[in-house]
Length: 228
Image (cartoon, rainbow, N blue to C red; front, side):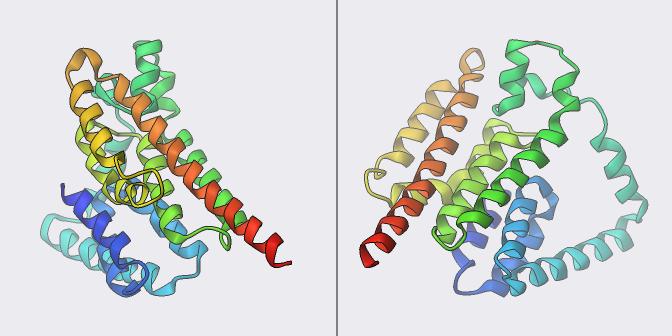
């Protein structure tokens, strides 16, 4: 819930209060897999107040936590990242789906970070190409959805992070029921025996966000052609 609140606040403040958005984004550093794509997007869009604000918050948190608990904790963090994750079978992203297809396959965890970084790189490449033909809201929504799909650690409670993307899709033509339908589907699929299907639901929603962004690109192209 805290990660979802910080991410939603960052998105809400993105246009009008860039520095405040950056400060909230810096607080999201305790879930770096969610903060990194948004930070990269701010750099790509040259929104200096956002990435400078996040750097300020992150620096303050790193210094205060280091003084309180010792800077050796940072080394411990990087050591733990490389350990085996026993929760992979319960994940609701590509890793959970892959585990269902090939239980116990060590390649799933070995590919976790490379897949995450590759998906984010592909997203940023696409945004760079269409940055002037799509809204920042559609770009942020797709970033959030893809992050949950590709994250090295996505569980049912992490789906709360989709809040701003669900509001964006729900506010578009034909998407009024998106939030309610997603909630009902999640509720039905949450029991353990069916939980793996949440991975498919998440993939479907990410595809919907991508389609919304592509529609904006098409609409922009049609408007340009008509104007010409």
